[in-house]
Image 1 (spheres, rainbow, N blue to C red):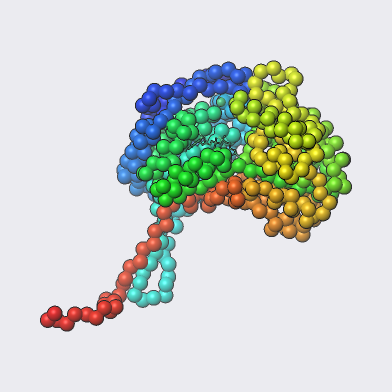
Image 2 (cartoon, protein in one colour):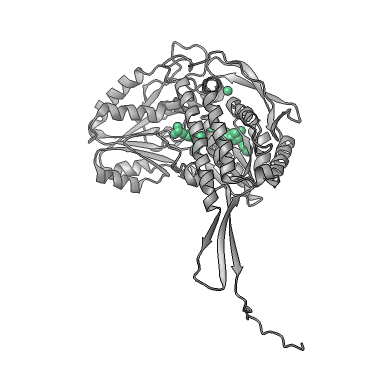
Length: 505
Ligand SMILES: NC(=O)c1ccc[n+]([C@@H]2O[C@H](COP(=O)([O-])OP(=O)(O)OC[C@H]3O[C@@H](n4cnc5c(N)ncnc54)[C@H](O)[C@@H]3O)[C@@H](O)[C@H]2O)c1
Ligand SMILES: C[N+](C)(C)CCCC=O
Ligand code: NA
């Protein structure tokens, strides 16, 4: 399905329903991580453009064509966006692969997820109409009360590069479903498909200002959004250090934020599993899908000692079978990491692990057959202890570290031995054991006998240093709503708290 040489569209910022050149006219080159070549460029917004976009968003909220819409009306726009994404699926998937290095297979799956997420949020928007005004019965004659669910206002959405259009959609779709006006700031490392979302919004006639898309650098475009006094909420997905900066900036205005940050998630494999190969494949997928650049990657394998050597042997056989190539090649299962910076970072983690005394059981280097591009072999690291960097820090690359355990207590202690708390996986056929682990895991997402399957009906997010708040499901929409209580005094009788003045007073 690949259109191999899809031209890279040259776009401006998408503000107020049209393409606008950034005030400072700056642009950022787009680099193809598979070839290291410059393919085009994206506009670089600054604070001046943020101001213009915020004003456009405020106008959209004040105008009837967006600000007074019902959920059902907004659902029509969301469904039209979903249909356009599917119509342009092969072009968008190819652009996503060219920009981020993800395999075409995964980019195509992302586009299906993007469309499905817009459709799902269209359903939520429709359902919102019946929940817009909810009476609350106090069983009192003198008061009538109800609760209104209203759009919160202007939503700032700041997203990462690992699933460029999908992570944006997890925020754009519910923000629009809720009736907010949104400003999306995608990652400067992969913004092409997010700009194409602007073109889709233009084509389907989304009211001007309802969604604005500002590409640019974090400190120049993201920071002014986070600290803008008229941005009512920030929803962020990205790294912990940036999350801290955003929370600090938002705190100056007591602005609500939700943070979906990184992780170092465990996958525990017990010796009671029925089928070793099935568990091996989930282990690989859990850590090497999207070249390991997944916030929820289960990158710490915690393996029961009794099956460790057999499991690792099988893991090696499967790992050697992974096709590493240009992400547009058929059957490619592992593409390059996103950028030279990420490439250096991943290799540094591997060399630090070696220097700390761990063993590189497999991989650890650039694949021999690929001379250009930011490629790293899928890497398996053993002889790891819990004080090592490789055990504690998120690599965000195809690197799995392994520790063994004897008892359940040991396994759970190792699993929870992390400052992060995004996801955990357990592989076991014992139902009671699985329940014990589900309860004991200190994370927001639990996978049983699998790792990574994600459904847009379910809440997505973590605890501890992985952040707070949820994307997806009905929880993903709630954060874009203002909950307003209305209390009406319905009695004809005076309140009679104060002594009433006499007639001649
Ligand atoms: N929990 C999740 O759902 C999830 C999903 C994807 C990625 N992640 C995490 O994201 C990280 C990788 O993504 P990344 O490198 O793009 O993260 P990042 O924090 O560098 O960048 C994320 C976004 O923030 C912007 N940004 C950077 N500095 C900023 C500032 N000072 N103010 C405002 N915005 C700023 C960037 O331009 C980008 O758009 C990993 O740690 C990963 O775990 C988490
Ligand atoms: C589990 N998914 C679908 C790969 C999405 C992960 C989002 C964070 O990186
Ligand atoms: Na890129």
